[in-house]
Image (cartoon, rainbow over all chains, first blue to last red; front, side):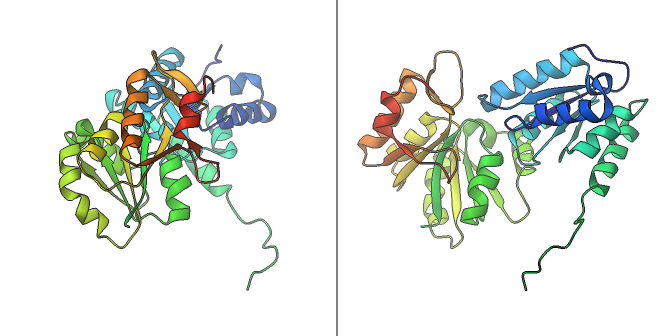
Length: 135
Length: 162
């Protein structure tokens, strides 16, 4: 994958979620912005093999951060394992589209970039309409 | 019985365990039986951070798990016992643990393993371990998450592809 200038990240998730999120980023922010993200799936990989494959993805992409889906998921466990080996690597859980859009639109890297991305991702979660009440 | 599921899973603590099984069974604790993890505070910290606050994780070697089996069985809250490979589960069964059934939850692709299911790949030694477990009267089947149909050991071993 050819990446444009700017902070880079791995999006590591279950099934096809990472591919889908990166595809959505491309639709909203453009292919150049989306190329800062490398999708990674945990499918078919055991724990050790998953960590090896993710480590290789981090190295080859120059990623500064790994976005994962579930805090308890295998991608997060693998990413935290790699972050302990490479203290400069950040791991952010709960990836969603607003979070990733914030990241790829940032001009610079560093902790403030993914802290802002987390804030954007959290701020986007809301109940937009109450719907029928269950009580 | 306090331990509801005895699972073999090479990812150990992960989403299927904590969410897929943990939520419908309202698991209160996980017993992770792995000699290497039990010897490493670093590894334990990594897996402990992966579980929600309402769930506790206990780290055991095979030997210490056998010593504490009665304590876990006496607990009122439901639990899940987890090994990362077939050999550790076989050692528990042959060591006398009262294990009625074993869930093969995930043994993924690796050199030397043959595909059986999308999430189960086995080498000859692992097949022998599972047969040995079943020979003790333990019901062995493969099932990744509760919503799928369990695949009995006989059918699992007869399969040649995922």
